[in-house]
Amino acid sequence: MDPFLVIWGVTALVLAAVLMPKWLRVAQREHYIPGWTARIARGWYRTKPLSWWPIAAAILVVLPVSFVISAVFEWVAVVYIAPVVAALVATVSPWGLRIRGTSSKFAWTDRVKRLAVIWFVLWLGVVAVLIVVLQMLSAALIVALGPLAMSSEAAFVALMLCAAIVNNAALVVAVILAPTLTDLALVIAKPLESLLSHKWLVAAQKKIKQVRPTVVAITGSYGKTSTKGYVTHLLQAQYSVVPSPASFNNLLGLSRAVNDKLTPGTEVFVAEMGVYQPGEIRELAKSFPPDIAAITVIGEAHLERMRNRETIFQAKAEITEKARIVVLPIDDPMLADLAALCAKLGKEVVTVSAQGAPADVSIDPVAGTLTSKGETVPVVIPGVGHAVNIAVAAGIAFALNVPVASYAPRLSNLPGASHRAEIAQAPSGAAIVDDTYNSNPVGAHRALEGAAALAAERGGPLVVVTPGMIELGSVQAERNRAFAEAIAQAGGTLCAVGYTNRAALRQGNPEALWFRHRTEAMTEALKRAGATGVILVENDLPDHYA
Image (cartoon, rainbow, N blue to C red):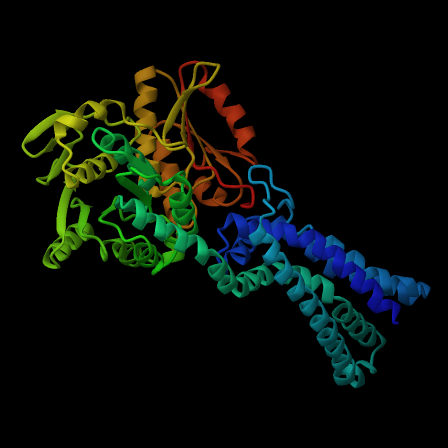
Protein backbone atom coordinates (compact mmCIF):
# COMPACT_ATOMS: atom_id res chain seq x y z
CA MET A 1 0.00 0.00 0.00
CA ASP A 2 1.20 3.49 -0.82
CA PRO A 3 2.72 4.94 2.40
CA PHE A 4 1.55 8.35 1.23
CA LEU A 5 -2.10 7.28 1.47
CA VAL A 6 -1.55 5.49 4.79
CA ILE A 7 -0.04 8.60 6.37
CA TRP A 8 -2.81 10.79 5.01
CA GLY A 9 -5.46 8.33 6.15
CA VAL A 10 -4.15 8.29 9.72
CA THR A 11 -3.87 12.08 9.66
CA ALA A 12 -7.48 12.37 8.47
CA LEU A 13 -8.58 10.35 11.51
CA VAL A 14 -6.57 12.57 13.85
CA LEU A 15 -8.01 15.69 12.25
CA ALA A 16 -11.53 14.31 12.62
CA ALA A 17 -10.94 13.76 16.34
CA VAL A 18 -10.01 17.44 16.68
CA LEU A 19 -12.43 19.11 14.28
CA MET A 20 -15.56 17.08 14.97
CA PRO A 21 -16.09 18.14 18.61
CA LYS A 22 -15.09 21.73 17.85
CA TRP A 23 -17.69 22.27 15.14
CA LEU A 24 -20.38 20.01 16.58
CA ARG A 25 -20.21 22.11 19.76
CA VAL A 26 -20.86 25.21 17.67
CA ALA A 27 -23.78 23.45 15.95
CA GLN A 28 -25.18 22.46 19.33
CA ARG A 29 -24.95 26.02 20.63
CA GLU A 30 -26.70 27.26 17.47
CA HIS A 31 -29.64 24.89 18.05
CA TYR A 32 -28.62 22.52 15.23
CA ILE A 33 -29.81 24.96 12.58
CA PRO A 34 -28.16 24.24 9.20
CA GLY A 35 -26.06 27.08 7.86
CA TRP A 36 -25.18 28.66 11.19
CA THR A 37 -21.98 26.74 11.87
CA ALA A 38 -20.37 28.15 8.73
CA ARG A 39 -21.81 31.56 9.62
CA ILE A 40 -20.05 31.48 12.98
CA ALA A 41 -16.79 30.54 11.26
CA ARG A 42 -17.16 33.44 8.82
CA GLY A 43 -17.81 35.74 11.75
CA TRP A 44 -14.47 34.81 13.29
CA TYR A 45 -12.58 35.40 10.05
CA ARG A 46 -14.38 38.69 9.38
CA THR A 47 -14.09 40.30 12.81
CA LYS A 48 -10.77 38.83 13.93
CA PRO A 49 -8.27 38.85 11.03
CA LEU A 50 -5.69 36.88 13.01
CA SER A 51 -8.11 33.95 12.90
CA TRP A 52 -6.69 33.26 9.44
CA TRP A 53 -3.06 32.84 10.43
CA PRO A 54 -3.01 29.02 10.91
CA ILE A 55 -4.49 28.46 7.44
CA ALA A 56 -2.24 31.09 5.91
CA ALA A 57 0.79 29.55 7.60
CA ALA A 58 -0.16 26.09 6.37
CA ILE A 59 -0.61 27.12 2.73
CA LEU A 60 1.95 29.91 2.38
CA VAL A 61 4.72 28.66 4.67
CA VAL A 62 4.62 24.96 5.53
CA LEU A 63 3.84 23.60 2.06
CA PRO A 64 6.19 25.89 0.05
CA VAL A 65 9.07 25.50 2.52
CA SER A 66 8.68 21.74 2.54
CA PHE A 67 8.84 21.69 -1.27
CA VAL A 68 12.04 23.75 -1.26
CA ILE A 69 13.63 21.56 1.41
CA SER A 70 12.76 18.35 -0.42
CA ALA A 71 14.06 19.75 -3.72
CA VAL A 72 17.30 21.23 -2.40
CA PHE A 73 18.28 18.60 0.14
CA GLU A 74 16.49 15.66 -1.52
CA TRP A 75 14.75 14.77 1.72
CA VAL A 76 11.93 12.61 0.42
CA ALA A 77 10.40 12.21 3.89
CA VAL A 78 9.48 15.88 3.87
CA VAL A 79 7.04 15.23 1.04
CA TYR A 80 5.10 12.87 3.32
CA ILE A 81 5.35 14.93 6.48
CA ALA A 82 4.59 18.42 5.13
CA PRO A 83 0.87 17.89 4.30
CA VAL A 84 0.37 16.40 7.76
CA VAL A 85 2.06 19.32 9.51
CA ALA A 86 0.18 21.83 7.36
CA ALA A 87 -3.19 20.25 8.16
CA LEU A 88 -2.45 20.07 11.89
CA VAL A 89 -1.46 23.74 11.88
CA ALA A 90 -4.69 24.63 10.05
CA THR A 91 -6.88 22.87 12.64
CA VAL A 92 -6.32 25.64 15.19
CA SER A 93 -8.13 28.03 12.85
CA PRO A 94 -10.10 30.14 13.63
CA TRP A 95 -7.44 31.14 16.12
CA GLY A 96 -9.11 31.51 19.51
CA LEU A 97 -12.08 29.18 18.99
CA ARG A 98 -11.74 26.49 21.62
CA ILE A 99 -12.37 22.80 21.06
CA ARG A 100 -13.88 22.59 24.54
CA GLY A 101 -15.96 25.50 25.71
CA THR A 102 -15.60 27.39 28.95
CA SER A 103 -18.97 29.15 29.17
CA SER A 104 -20.75 26.47 27.14
CA LYS A 105 -19.47 22.93 27.56
CA PHE A 106 -20.01 20.38 24.81
CA ALA A 107 -22.75 17.88 25.74
CA TRP A 108 -22.23 14.49 24.10
CA THR A 109 -25.95 13.70 23.70
CA ASP A 110 -27.54 10.93 21.66
CA ARG A 111 -28.34 13.48 18.99
CA VAL A 112 -24.72 14.58 18.81
CA LYS A 113 -23.59 10.96 18.56
CA ARG A 114 -25.84 10.40 15.56
CA LEU A 115 -24.64 13.64 14.03
CA ALA A 116 -21.03 12.61 14.65
CA VAL A 117 -21.48 9.41 12.64
CA ILE A 118 -22.88 11.36 9.69
CA TRP A 119 -20.12 13.97 10.03
CA PHE A 120 -17.38 11.31 10.07
CA VAL A 121 -18.68 9.57 6.94
CA LEU A 122 -18.91 12.90 5.13
CA TRP A 123 -15.43 13.82 6.32
CA LEU A 124 -13.83 10.67 4.93
CA GLY A 125 -15.67 11.17 1.64
CA VAL A 126 -14.61 14.81 1.35
CA VAL A 127 -10.97 14.01 2.13
CA ALA A 128 -10.90 11.20 -0.44
CA VAL A 129 -12.49 13.37 -3.13
CA LEU A 130 -10.15 16.28 -2.41
CA ILE A 131 -7.06 14.07 -2.63
CA VAL A 132 -8.12 12.77 -6.04
CA VAL A 133 -9.33 16.11 -7.41
CA LEU A 134 -6.33 18.15 -6.26
CA GLN A 135 -3.84 15.58 -7.51
CA MET A 136 -5.58 15.65 -10.88
CA LEU A 137 -5.54 19.46 -10.83
CA SER A 138 -1.84 19.47 -9.98
CA ALA A 139 -1.08 17.16 -12.89
CA ALA A 140 -3.24 19.27 -15.19
CA LEU A 141 -1.28 22.39 -14.21
CA ILE A 142 2.00 20.74 -15.12
CA VAL A 143 0.66 19.44 -18.44
CA ALA A 144 -0.97 22.74 -19.40
CA LEU A 145 1.75 25.14 -18.29
CA GLY A 146 4.82 22.92 -18.46
CA PRO A 147 5.80 23.86 -22.03
CA LEU A 148 5.54 27.56 -21.20
CA ALA A 149 7.56 27.18 -18.01
CA MET A 150 10.43 25.42 -19.77
CA SER A 151 11.61 28.74 -21.21
CA SER A 152 12.74 29.93 -17.79
CA GLU A 153 14.18 28.10 -14.83
CA ALA A 154 12.42 30.49 -12.46
CA ALA A 155 9.09 29.90 -14.19
CA PHE A 156 9.60 26.15 -14.04
CA VAL A 157 10.38 26.27 -10.31
CA ALA A 158 7.34 28.46 -9.69
CA LEU A 159 5.11 26.05 -11.61
CA MET A 160 6.41 23.05 -9.71
CA LEU A 161 5.97 24.91 -6.43
CA CYS A 162 2.33 25.75 -7.25
CA ALA A 163 1.68 22.19 -8.40
CA ALA A 164 3.20 20.79 -5.20
CA ILE A 165 1.07 23.08 -3.03
CA VAL A 166 -2.11 22.09 -4.88
CA ASN A 167 -1.15 18.40 -4.76
CA ASN A 168 -0.58 18.46 -0.99
CA ALA A 169 -3.35 20.83 0.10
CA ALA A 170 -6.21 18.31 0.31
CA LEU A 171 -6.17 17.99 4.09
CA VAL A 172 -5.85 21.75 4.60
CA VAL A 173 -8.81 22.39 2.28
CA ALA A 174 -10.79 19.73 4.16
CA VAL A 175 -10.06 21.58 7.42
CA ILE A 176 -11.35 24.82 5.87
CA LEU A 177 -14.54 23.05 4.76
CA ALA A 178 -15.22 21.48 8.18
CA PRO A 179 -17.86 24.08 9.25
CA THR A 180 -19.74 23.68 5.96
CA LEU A 181 -19.44 19.92 6.33
CA THR A 182 -21.09 20.23 9.74
CA ASP A 183 -24.01 22.15 8.24
CA LEU A 184 -24.40 19.46 5.57
CA ALA A 185 -24.49 16.82 8.31
CA LEU A 186 -27.26 18.81 10.03
CA VAL A 187 -29.30 18.85 6.82
CA ILE A 188 -28.92 15.09 6.40
CA ALA A 189 -29.75 14.41 10.06
CA LYS A 190 -32.85 16.60 10.21
CA PRO A 191 -35.40 14.06 8.85
CA LEU A 192 -34.01 11.39 11.17
CA GLU A 193 -34.24 13.68 14.20
CA SER A 194 -37.83 14.59 13.33
CA LEU A 195 -38.73 10.92 13.11
CA LEU A 196 -37.05 10.05 16.41
CA SER A 197 -38.64 12.96 18.28
CA HIS A 198 -42.14 12.16 16.98
CA LYS A 199 -42.82 9.64 19.77
CA TRP A 200 -42.23 12.33 22.41
CA LEU A 201 -44.61 14.66 20.59
CA VAL A 202 -47.30 11.96 20.40
CA ALA A 203 -46.92 11.25 24.12
CA ALA A 204 -47.20 14.97 24.92
CA GLN A 205 -50.29 15.41 22.78
CA LYS A 206 -51.88 12.42 24.48
CA LYS A 207 -51.14 13.90 27.89
CA ILE A 208 -52.62 17.27 26.90
CA LYS A 209 -55.84 15.49 25.90
CA GLN A 210 -55.92 13.57 29.19
CA VAL A 211 -55.26 16.53 31.50
CA ARG A 212 -57.17 19.03 29.32
CA PRO A 213 -55.65 22.27 30.62
CA THR A 214 -56.29 25.64 29.04
CA VAL A 215 -53.25 26.15 26.81
CA VAL A 216 -51.81 29.67 26.82
CA ALA A 217 -49.17 30.29 24.14
CA ILE A 218 -46.84 33.29 24.26
CA THR A 219 -44.43 34.51 21.62
CA GLY A 220 -42.65 37.75 20.77
CA SER A 221 -39.28 39.08 19.74
CA TYR A 222 -38.44 39.47 23.41
CA GLY A 223 -40.16 39.35 26.77
CA LYS A 224 -41.57 35.83 26.32
CA THR A 225 -39.95 34.30 29.38
CA SER A 226 -40.61 37.30 31.64
CA THR A 227 -44.24 37.44 30.50
CA LYS A 228 -44.61 33.71 31.08
CA GLY A 229 -43.41 34.22 34.65
CA TYR A 230 -45.82 37.11 35.18
CA VAL A 231 -48.74 35.11 33.75
CA THR A 232 -48.00 32.18 36.04
CA HIS A 233 -47.72 34.51 39.03
CA LEU A 234 -51.00 36.34 38.32
CA LEU A 235 -53.06 33.27 37.41
CA GLN A 236 -52.01 31.39 40.53
CA ALA A 237 -54.44 33.66 42.37
CA GLN A 238 -57.20 31.50 40.91
CA TYR A 239 -55.81 28.55 38.91
CA SER A 240 -53.40 25.63 39.11
CA VAL A 241 -50.76 26.69 36.58
CA VAL A 242 -47.80 24.89 34.98
CA PRO A 243 -45.41 26.94 32.80
CA SER A 244 -42.96 25.46 30.33
CA PRO A 245 -39.55 25.56 32.07
CA ALA A 246 -36.65 27.85 31.19
CA SER A 247 -36.61 28.54 27.45
CA PHE A 248 -38.10 25.22 26.35
CA ASN A 249 -39.79 26.92 23.42
CA ASN A 250 -39.37 24.57 20.44
CA LEU A 251 -41.25 21.40 19.50
CA LEU A 252 -38.99 18.99 21.38
CA GLY A 253 -38.70 21.34 24.37
CA LEU A 254 -42.46 21.78 24.72
CA SER A 255 -43.01 18.04 24.29
CA ARG A 256 -40.58 17.42 27.11
CA ALA A 257 -42.21 20.12 29.25
CA VAL A 258 -45.63 18.52 28.86
CA ASN A 259 -44.37 14.99 29.45
CA ASP A 260 -42.30 15.94 32.51
CA LYS A 261 -44.30 18.74 34.15
CA LEU A 262 -48.00 18.40 33.32
CA THR A 263 -49.90 16.61 36.08
CA PRO A 264 -53.58 15.75 36.63
CA GLY A 265 -55.38 18.77 38.02
CA THR A 266 -53.37 21.29 36.03
CA GLU A 267 -55.83 23.94 34.87
CA VAL A 268 -53.57 26.16 32.77
CA PHE A 269 -50.44 25.28 30.79
CA VAL A 270 -48.39 28.34 29.79
CA ALA A 271 -46.23 27.60 26.76
CA GLU A 272 -43.48 29.87 25.49
CA MET A 273 -43.12 29.50 21.70
CA GLY A 274 -39.91 30.58 19.98
CA VAL A 275 -39.18 30.94 16.29
CA TYR A 276 -36.07 31.01 14.11
CA GLN A 277 -37.81 30.86 10.75
CA PRO A 278 -41.33 31.23 9.30
CA GLY A 279 -43.52 28.17 9.77
CA GLU A 280 -42.07 27.04 13.09
CA ILE A 281 -44.74 28.62 15.28
CA ARG A 282 -47.44 27.33 12.95
CA GLU A 283 -46.05 23.83 13.54
CA LEU A 284 -45.93 24.42 17.30
CA ALA A 285 -49.49 25.75 17.37
CA LYS A 286 -50.66 22.81 15.28
CA SER A 287 -49.00 20.36 17.68
CA PHE A 288 -50.16 22.19 20.83
CA PRO A 289 -53.24 24.23 19.80
CA PRO A 290 -53.51 27.24 22.10
CA ASP A 291 -56.80 28.34 23.60
CA ILE A 292 -55.24 31.74 24.23
CA ALA A 293 -52.41 33.18 22.13
CA ALA A 294 -50.41 36.29 22.98
CA ILE A 295 -47.66 38.30 21.31
CA THR A 296 -45.46 40.56 23.41
CA VAL A 297 -43.43 42.65 20.95
CA ILE A 298 -42.39 42.65 17.30
CA GLY A 299 -38.76 43.71 17.38
CA GLU A 300 -35.45 43.10 15.66
CA ALA A 301 -34.31 40.01 17.56
CA HIS A 302 -33.20 37.30 15.10
CA LEU A 303 -33.40 39.82 12.26
CA GLU A 304 -30.46 38.13 10.55
CA ARG A 305 -32.41 34.88 10.38
CA MET A 306 -35.68 36.54 9.30
CA ARG A 307 -34.28 39.27 6.99
CA ASN A 308 -36.86 41.97 7.84
CA ARG A 309 -39.38 43.04 10.47
CA GLU A 310 -42.36 42.14 8.26
CA THR A 311 -41.18 38.52 8.09
CA ILE A 312 -40.73 38.51 11.86
CA PHE A 313 -44.29 39.80 12.26
CA GLN A 314 -45.73 37.18 9.90
CA ALA A 315 -43.84 34.41 11.71
CA LYS A 316 -45.06 35.57 15.14
CA ALA A 317 -48.63 36.07 13.90
CA GLU A 318 -48.86 32.35 13.14
CA ILE A 319 -49.54 31.81 16.83
CA THR A 320 -53.01 33.34 16.47
CA GLU A 321 -54.21 31.01 13.70
CA LYS A 322 -55.46 28.17 15.94
CA ALA A 323 -56.34 30.27 18.98
CA ARG A 324 -59.86 31.07 20.14
CA ILE A 325 -58.70 34.11 22.13
CA VAL A 326 -55.80 36.43 21.26
CA VAL A 327 -54.09 38.98 23.50
CA LEU A 328 -52.31 41.76 21.61
CA PRO A 329 -50.58 45.05 22.53
CA ILE A 330 -52.17 47.70 20.32
CA ASP A 331 -49.39 50.27 20.84
CA ASP A 332 -47.65 48.62 17.89
CA PRO A 333 -49.51 49.42 14.63
CA MET A 334 -48.69 45.97 13.25
CA LEU A 335 -50.26 44.25 16.24
CA ALA A 336 -53.19 46.68 16.25
CA ASP A 337 -53.91 45.68 12.65
CA LEU A 338 -53.58 42.02 13.60
CA ALA A 339 -56.07 42.55 16.43
CA ALA A 340 -58.56 44.01 13.96
CA LEU A 341 -58.02 41.09 11.57
CA CYS A 342 -58.50 38.52 14.33
CA ALA A 343 -61.74 40.23 15.37
CA LYS A 344 -63.00 40.01 11.77
CA LEU A 345 -62.18 36.29 11.79
CA GLY A 346 -64.46 35.84 14.79
CA LYS A 347 -61.81 35.45 17.45
CA GLU A 348 -62.16 37.00 20.88
CA VAL A 349 -59.57 39.78 21.06
CA VAL A 350 -58.17 41.18 24.29
CA THR A 351 -56.35 44.45 23.66
CA VAL A 352 -53.64 45.74 25.97
CA SER A 353 -51.59 48.92 26.10
CA ALA A 354 -48.37 49.78 27.91
CA GLN A 355 -48.69 53.47 27.05
CA GLY A 356 -51.99 54.33 28.70
CA ALA A 357 -54.08 53.99 25.52
CA PRO A 358 -57.72 52.85 25.79
CA ALA A 359 -57.74 49.03 25.86
CA ASP A 360 -59.12 46.08 27.78
CA VAL A 361 -56.00 46.30 29.92
CA SER A 362 -54.11 49.59 29.98
CA ILE A 363 -50.97 50.42 31.93
CA ASP A 364 -49.96 54.03 32.50
CA PRO A 365 -46.21 53.76 33.16
CA VAL A 366 -45.98 57.39 34.30
CA ALA A 367 -48.79 57.13 36.85
CA GLY A 368 -47.83 53.56 37.74
CA THR A 369 -51.38 52.26 37.35
CA LEU A 370 -53.19 49.42 35.60
CA THR A 371 -56.77 49.87 34.44
CA SER A 372 -59.08 47.01 33.46
CA LYS A 373 -62.84 46.49 33.60
CA GLY A 374 -63.26 49.95 35.08
CA GLU A 375 -60.89 49.27 37.96
CA THR A 376 -57.59 51.07 38.41
CA VAL A 377 -54.92 49.58 40.64
CA PRO A 378 -51.28 50.47 41.31
CA VAL A 379 -48.59 48.49 39.52
CA VAL A 380 -44.86 48.41 40.19
CA ILE A 381 -42.88 48.43 36.95
CA PRO A 382 -39.27 47.37 37.56
CA GLY A 383 -36.78 50.14 36.82
CA VAL A 384 -35.27 48.15 33.96
CA GLY A 385 -38.40 46.19 33.11
CA HIS A 386 -40.96 46.35 30.32
CA ALA A 387 -44.51 47.48 31.02
CA VAL A 388 -45.76 45.62 27.93
CA ASN A 389 -44.87 42.27 29.52
CA ILE A 390 -47.04 43.10 32.53
CA ALA A 391 -49.84 44.36 30.28
CA VAL A 392 -49.87 41.14 28.24
CA ALA A 393 -49.84 39.02 31.40
CA ALA A 394 -52.79 40.99 32.78
CA GLY A 395 -54.51 40.62 29.40
CA ILE A 396 -54.24 36.85 29.69
CA ALA A 397 -55.68 37.06 33.20
CA PHE A 398 -58.51 39.15 31.69
CA ALA A 399 -59.13 36.42 29.08
CA LEU A 400 -59.37 33.81 31.83
CA ASN A 401 -61.83 35.93 33.83
CA VAL A 402 -59.50 36.50 36.76
CA PRO A 403 -60.87 39.54 38.65
CA VAL A 404 -58.52 42.49 38.91
CA ALA A 405 -59.01 42.43 42.66
CA SER A 406 -57.69 38.85 42.76
CA TYR A 407 -54.39 39.50 41.03
CA ALA A 408 -53.86 43.16 42.01
CA PRO A 409 -51.94 42.31 45.23
CA ARG A 410 -49.56 40.21 43.13
CA LEU A 411 -48.60 43.14 40.91
CA SER A 412 -46.33 44.49 43.63
CA ASN A 413 -44.06 41.43 43.75
CA LEU A 414 -43.74 40.22 40.18
CA PRO A 415 -41.07 37.52 39.75
CA GLY A 416 -37.90 38.29 37.83
CA ALA A 417 -36.54 36.08 35.09
CA SER A 418 -32.96 34.88 35.29
CA HIS A 419 -30.44 37.19 33.57
CA ARG A 420 -33.19 39.57 32.49
CA ALA A 421 -32.52 42.88 34.21
CA GLU A 422 -31.74 41.21 37.53
CA ILE A 423 -30.24 43.59 40.07
CA ALA A 424 -27.64 42.36 42.54
CA GLN A 425 -25.04 43.97 44.77
CA ALA A 426 -21.32 43.36 44.42
CA PRO A 427 -19.18 42.93 47.57
CA SER A 428 -17.81 46.41 46.85
CA GLY A 429 -21.32 47.85 47.14
CA ALA A 430 -21.81 48.52 43.43
CA ALA A 431 -25.17 47.59 41.91
CA ILE A 432 -24.93 45.08 39.05
CA VAL A 433 -27.77 44.94 36.54
CA ASP A 434 -27.60 41.54 34.85
CA ASP A 435 -29.33 41.85 31.48
CA THR A 436 -27.26 39.22 29.71
CA TYR A 437 -29.99 37.11 28.13
CA ASN A 438 -30.54 37.63 24.38
CA SER A 439 -30.00 41.37 24.10
CA ASN A 440 -31.99 43.34 21.55
CA PRO A 441 -31.98 47.06 20.59
CA VAL A 442 -35.16 48.10 22.42
CA GLY A 443 -34.35 46.04 25.49
CA ALA A 444 -30.75 47.28 25.61
CA HIS A 445 -31.78 50.94 25.49
CA ARG A 446 -34.49 50.33 28.10
CA ALA A 447 -31.95 48.62 30.36
CA LEU A 448 -29.53 51.52 29.83
CA GLU A 449 -32.21 54.06 30.79
CA GLY A 450 -33.02 52.11 33.93
CA ALA A 451 -29.36 51.64 34.88
CA ALA A 452 -28.62 55.34 34.29
CA ALA A 453 -31.58 56.32 36.48
CA LEU A 454 -30.38 53.94 39.19
CA ALA A 455 -26.85 55.39 38.98
CA ALA A 456 -28.24 58.92 39.36
CA GLU A 457 -30.32 57.80 42.33
CA ARG A 458 -27.27 56.24 43.99
CA GLY A 459 -25.02 59.16 43.08
CA GLY A 460 -22.40 56.94 41.49
CA PRO A 461 -20.86 56.33 38.05
CA LEU A 462 -22.43 54.20 35.34
CA VAL A 463 -20.37 51.48 33.66
CA VAL A 464 -21.68 49.29 30.84
CA VAL A 465 -20.07 45.93 30.03
CA THR A 466 -21.22 44.52 26.70
CA PRO A 467 -20.13 42.53 23.65
CA GLY A 468 -22.90 44.25 21.73
CA MET A 469 -25.92 42.71 20.04
CA ILE A 470 -25.96 39.95 17.43
CA GLU A 471 -28.25 38.37 14.81
CA LEU A 472 -29.39 41.79 13.57
CA GLY A 473 -28.33 41.29 9.95
CA SER A 474 -27.64 44.40 7.92
CA VAL A 475 -28.49 46.77 10.81
CA GLN A 476 -26.23 45.12 13.40
CA ALA A 477 -23.37 47.61 13.09
CA GLU A 478 -25.78 50.55 13.11
CA ARG A 479 -27.63 49.33 16.21
CA ASN A 480 -24.41 48.71 18.12
CA ARG A 481 -23.04 52.13 17.16
CA ALA A 482 -26.26 53.74 18.37
CA PHE A 483 -26.13 51.85 21.66
CA ALA A 484 -22.51 52.88 22.22
CA GLU A 485 -23.45 56.51 21.51
CA ALA A 486 -26.33 56.28 23.98
CA ILE A 487 -23.93 55.03 26.67
CA ALA A 488 -21.70 58.06 26.10
CA GLN A 489 -24.69 60.41 26.17
CA ALA A 490 -25.79 58.87 29.47
CA GLY A 491 -22.37 59.67 30.90
CA GLY A 492 -21.42 56.02 31.18
CA THR A 493 -18.13 54.24 30.60
CA LEU A 494 -18.31 51.53 27.94
CA CYS A 495 -16.31 48.34 28.44
CA ALA A 496 -16.61 46.52 25.11
CA VAL A 497 -15.97 42.77 25.12
CA GLY A 498 -14.74 40.55 22.28
CA TYR A 499 -14.23 41.09 18.58
CA THR A 500 -17.74 40.53 17.20
CA ASN A 501 -18.95 44.13 17.55
CA ARG A 502 -15.71 45.85 18.57
CA ALA A 503 -15.49 48.10 15.50
CA ALA A 504 -19.11 49.30 15.69
CA LEU A 505 -18.98 49.94 19.45
CA ARG A 506 -15.77 51.94 19.09
CA GLN A 507 -17.24 53.96 16.23
CA GLY A 508 -20.18 54.90 18.41
CA ASN A 509 -18.04 55.56 21.47
CA PRO A 510 -14.36 56.30 20.69
CA GLU A 511 -13.58 56.45 24.42
CA ALA A 512 -14.69 52.86 24.92
CA LEU A 513 -12.36 50.45 26.69
CA TRP A 514 -11.88 47.05 25.07
CA PHE A 515 -11.34 43.64 26.65
CA ARG A 516 -10.96 40.17 25.18
CA HIS A 517 -12.99 38.48 27.93
CA ARG A 518 -15.88 39.56 30.12
CA THR A 519 -14.01 38.67 33.33
CA GLU A 520 -11.35 41.26 32.47
CA ALA A 521 -14.03 43.84 31.67
CA MET A 522 -15.86 43.18 34.94
CA THR A 523 -12.65 43.63 36.94
CA GLU A 524 -12.18 47.07 35.39
CA ALA A 525 -15.89 47.90 35.74
CA LEU A 526 -15.84 47.13 39.47
CA LYS A 527 -12.84 49.41 39.93
CA ARG A 528 -14.55 52.27 38.13
CA ALA A 529 -17.96 51.77 39.78
CA GLY A 530 -16.63 51.90 43.33
CA ALA A 531 -19.13 51.49 46.15
CA THR A 532 -21.95 53.62 44.75
CA GLY A 533 -21.81 52.98 41.00
CA VAL A 534 -23.99 50.88 38.73
CA ILE A 535 -22.68 48.25 36.31
CA LEU A 536 -25.00 47.25 33.49
CA VAL A 537 -23.97 43.92 31.97
CA GLU A 538 -25.80 43.94 28.65
CA ASN A 539 -25.69 40.65 26.76
CA ASP A 540 -23.20 37.82 27.11
CA LEU A 541 -22.10 36.03 23.96
CA PRO A 542 -21.21 32.35 24.31
CA ASP A 543 -17.55 31.54 23.76
CA HIS A 544 -18.02 30.23 20.22
CA TYR A 545 -18.36 33.87 19.14
CA ALA A 546 -15.23 35.91 18.45
